[in-house]
Each structure stands twice: as structure tokens, then as C-alpha cells.
Image (cartoon, rainbow, N blue to C red; front, side, top):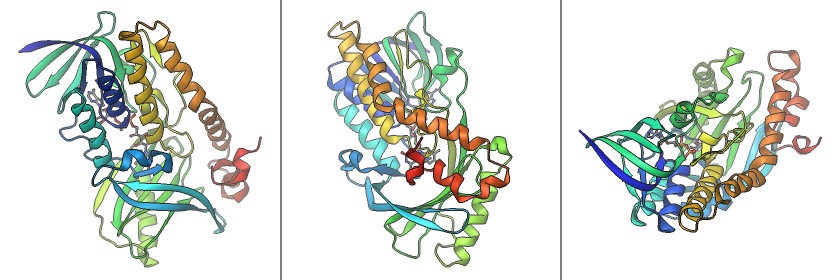
Length: 357
Ligand SMILES: Cc1cc2nc3c(=O)[nH]c(=O)nc-3n(C[C@H](O)[C@H](O)[C@H](O)COP(=O)(O)OP(=O)(O)OC[C@H]3O[C@@H](n4cnc5c(N)ncnc54)[C@H](O)[C@@H]3O)c2cc1C
């Protein structure tokens, strides 16, 4: 049986982008509904769980903060490595997403879990979700697409799929207390890299690659895992397996389509070199919620264009540089040059060469 609900803002997806959008919109006084296809927000976790320090204020809820990270050690193909300052926090990503959504709910947003958006009539500003209570048709005044790398909203509008990197990750016991994130740059990982992020007594160990170069992230992760087990650094037991797609094509050409705003991974806000996207997801979601309120409550006709301009001002330049570096690196994968340190120094954010022209 279909029921019908009228809302000001419909938020699709309750990751960090959707949670922040729902929170900001509800706090501003809008009638907000959010649909999330997962039964439990943030579960399963598909993330290495590193956030930069400026996001610390979002890591204050109980159970979110796991450990501090002082810096990053970047390993080059020659075996040389370099340390750099890259302070941040390791979080429990499920708890992080849940805390945002909980606050949105407490601010008045109606959260529909286990509820998948399956239909969108953008011309009629209505959308259908399959929920445990049956189908709900939402008549919305504004929609926020926070539905991740394979955005259903984008597909419904006929927008092209985003270029992605594929990642696999194991959580394994860590035998040494570490305060640094570790990164491996190598011709073995075309279009990506491998990582070890310490999180208390365990570590998130992962590999991300561009499958167009014929690389298999799971096989590569198994090799890396075995080598670290042999070195006595991590345990053999795999406590958790996860993975996922990371958009690496840069910002979508348009973040606003009529009365729809794209945020987070759905907008292409993930960094094309590092794959980091939580900070941009939170910032863009929050800004979208504020823009929704300005547009709907204060009748500010420029509010949605201002949202797009602000996001481009904040993230455009660094995403553009990263996308350009990614394209530049692309010519070397599967060539002998991909084994040279100088190529990776120019292609990785921890080295000064990355920031030179
Ligand atoms: C393996 C891996 C490791 C990563 N590690 C890091 C890291 O350490 N640090 C970092 O900053 N970034 C990391 N990222 C990237 C980061 O996870 C994303 O950038 C971030 O999750 C983007 O948030 P989002 O809210 O835009 O999208 P998501 O977190 O993907 O949330 C989208 C939500 O929409 C829901 N959804 C999708 N379709 C529908 C539908 N039709 N109806 C209802 N709900 C729907 C999904 O279930 C999901 O909950 C990693 C990504 C991967 C894959």
C-alpha cells in the first residue's frame, strides 16, 4: 500500500553527507525526511576511518574517536620512505555516521531506515521509497542527493557514471602501537595505493586500484597482508573485510539540477588522489541544508547557485589539481617509469613535488 508524505527537503542517503544535510535543514526549521537503504546507518563500514583534524568536533559523540594519528609515512617503489605531518583521527565510522543522523533526528528530521529510493519523478518533484511500512511517495520541494558513488538520483536523471577506484580492506590485529598512517606507492597498485591505518590494537589494511589497468585489489591485498604477517607486524586473523568504490573523476559538471542538490560522493567530491571524502561530504551536506533553508524559508532565489559556487570555491582547486595529477600519472602505469620514485613523488600529496607545477 502506498502512503504519501509532503516534505520540504527529502534527503537520499544517510552517510556523512546526508546526515549533515538532514541536520542543517532540520535545525533551520524545514520539514525533513531522509531515506537510507541500510538497516543500520553506516553498517557495514566501507571506509579506512581516517578523518582530518578539523573534523574533530564531529568525533565527540561516545564511541566515535578511536585514536590520534600524528603523521604519514609514505613508502616509495625503491624502498625509501618519508614521514610527513598529516595529523588526524581514526574513528569508528559507523558511530560517526550514526551520531550525525541521531542529531538530525533529534532536531526533527524523520529518518526512514531500511528504505530505498526506487523512483524519481524530478519534473513532478516526487519520489518513491520502499520502506518496511510499504511504499511511500514523497512530494518534496527540494531534494538532496547524498546517495554515494553510484547515486540512484544521478542515474535517474541520466547523468553518466563516475570514474571510480576499487578498494578492498581487511581489519587485522596490529602488533605494534603506531601513531602514523602508512602508505605504499608502487607500480603494483596502478591508479591507487595501499594503506595501513592504526586503530588501537587493530589496523585497517587496504588496497585501492584502477581496475582498467587489470589489477585485482583483493589479490594484491592478500599479498600485502601476507608480507606484513611475515614481518611480524600484523596478525593473520582477518577481523573484518570490506571494500567499495571511490569516485576519482572530480566534481560533477553541475551540483544543482533544478530543485536537486548533489553532495558528497554523489557530487564527485572525493579527492582523486587520496580517495578521502568524509570532510567534503560533511561540509557539502551542511552547506546544502543551509541553502535549502535559505531557498525555501527566506525565499532567497540565489541560494542554490550560491551553494554550488561555495562548494566550487572550497574544493574546486584542490580537486582539479588532483584530477590533473591522476591523469598525468595515468600515462605511466604499466610502463617502466611507474617503478621510479620521482613519478610517485609528483603524484602523491605528502611530497612537495605534488604542489609544484
Ligand atoms: C574502502 C574505502 C575506504 C575509505 N577510506 C576513507 C578514509 O579513511 N577517509 C575519508 O575521508 N574517506 C574515505 N573513503 C571515502 C569516504 O568513505 C566517502 O567519501 C564518504 O563515505 C562519502 O560520504 P557520502 O555521505 O557522500 O556517501 P556514503 O557514505 O556512500 O553514503 C551514501 C548513503 O546512501 C545510501 N544509499 C545509496 N543509494 C540509496 C537509495 N537508492 N536509497 C536510499 N539510500 C541509498 C547508502 O546506503 C549510503 O549509506 C573511503 C572509501 C572507501 C570505499
